[in-house]
Length: 329
Image (cartoon, rainbow, N blue to C red; front, side, top):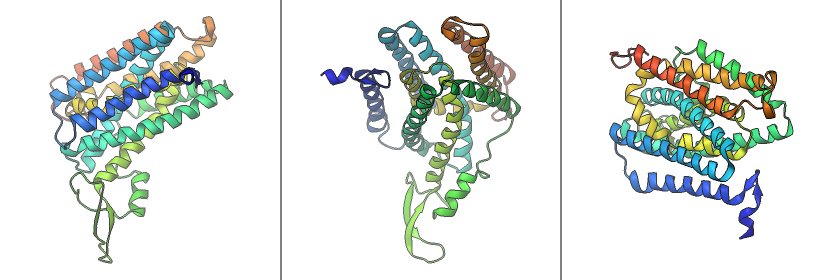
């Protein structure tokens, strides 16, 4: 059993196996037990599931504290909160995608489930690449920090702009290279149907597949912000990946919980913009203020993160009180 204590990306192999075991169990439970058949996810159920995933993510933070210490746990919780908050912005865009392709709630869970599987792989690749760059080129953290500040300012300026699904070059590229049906075919991503020009029976992608492609594309776009953000909090690959994935695992439940009241969080984007600027700025502040170890105190970072997000949520709920659906869009 000595191989379990073999070092892999800076941590014993058993720590990684324990994490992947939890993730695999959750995915099997989700698709194989709770949602074996297509059905609409009610708000009450999604709220309970979202609470479950948040509790589980925070509980894993307790495990990190037990195994790796208080500093690692604070960095994990900060990363988890940041990623969960950025995921809320992802929820807003996913709602636009489903609306554009007229995907019924009955089939939305299927798209999100397979989307999450793709996210787990894509985030792993991006985080692995980021960890390699950080270990080889220490200065890359300052590039990440500057990029986060730029992204935060851009997000603030474009907070009122809606995502244009129809104008996406990715969607246009897919449509040019695949035969696509005009209508949904239940929960199927691909169907065999006569070609509109030749009459031959060929494989067609359905709008449900296009929705999946756009969900994956949107996550890549968001990962460009979120991965540098977590590396600005910690460079430990284990903390980076586990906090990222635990935040993403609850994305489906979060979507169904918030999709009916997206308009109530319209102003949260401004808080997320401020948060990105803060996360980037603290890399420079750690050097300017000569903090011990050259790192911004994790307890300060966690407290300020909570304060920014609490202010954003509170202000958004206050500004949209009494609004009808979509009034703040």
